[in-house]
Amino acid sequence: MSGSGRSRKRGLQQSSSGNKRYQGTDSPQLPHAVFPQNNSGYGSDQDGARTELGRDPTPAQIPVGATLQTTLRRYRQCETGWKHSKAYKELKNIFVSRILKQNGASTTKCICFGLGSPTERDPDNACMYQLAAFKSVIDLVLPARQQQQQQQRQPRAALAQDPCFTTLDRELLSHLHISVVNHPAAFHHINATAATTFVFCPYVDPDVLHEVVSRSPTIYLGWHPWQIEPCDQVKVLMAELRRKRQEFLRLPAFEPIINPRRNIFDEMSIFWTSSSSSP
Image 1 (cartoon, helix red, strand yellow):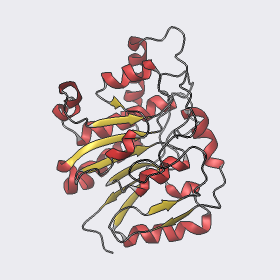
Image 2 (image 1 turned 45 degrees about the horizontal axis):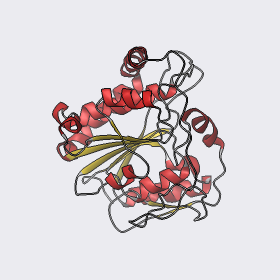
Image 3 (image 1 turned 90 degrees about the vertical axis):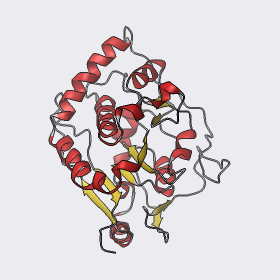
Image 4 (image 1 turned 180 degrees about the vertical axis):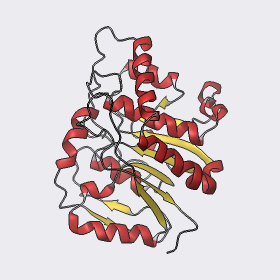
């Protein structure tokens, strides 16, 4: 389950993961992550995935006096800061010069897991900056008409799933043409058809990362899997990625405007399938 964004993003980077391992498949996709089966938050759903909640999620609290208008002002400020950063420029260059040339025309789904509550009071505006990053990729890979399909009862193109979303979060996301879905619906949208799926996972719980990676998204941006993997497993993972002709780049440090001591996108990387890479 994706928990509260702020506590999760600060705590998991120091989490122990000695009982986790990665194993690959024969298909040219991201390697499948295998985690212990006794995670308390997950069961089995209709397609065999461990995506049923075993505990009740707690939504975040709406800040006193916050409205959609004040929240949009915060969002626009963070969006401006993000788009002026080296990290965004590098990410945009990767999509325009490499990824979109291969499969951009077929990208029909953009899904975000574990965003946290962007409207929650946070001196770093971490979730808001990460929302701006997700929306910037949506704008790169999905045409405006496709982003607005949910207004016309068409299949939704941009989705977000996090049990801590508040009603104000949902208003903000809807304004940005991002549909909120309840757990575990978003998992079933990953490669549900032959379409290309982009998935954004900013510091999600290990259980969520496992479920996302096991469903083989074509493009993945988020916490690098080796951040929850023992150091001696890193070489194995990277060899598996190379064998499957996956390309990967680590994003440069994002220069936060408010708190320069904290890198909001620390250890974020992007993986994508490349037909031109050598096995």
